[in-house]
Image: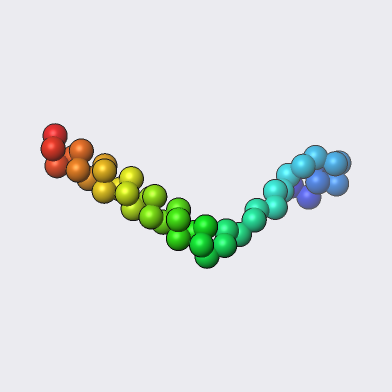
Length: 44
């Protein structure tokens, strides 16, 4: 990867750490999706 970086290729990306509020919103959505999937399994 260092050789590729030295040649000018873009091999790494910078990620933005989500704020506490953003992560809380995502957690609520993930939990809702998980519960919906569980409900589908139970109903099947």
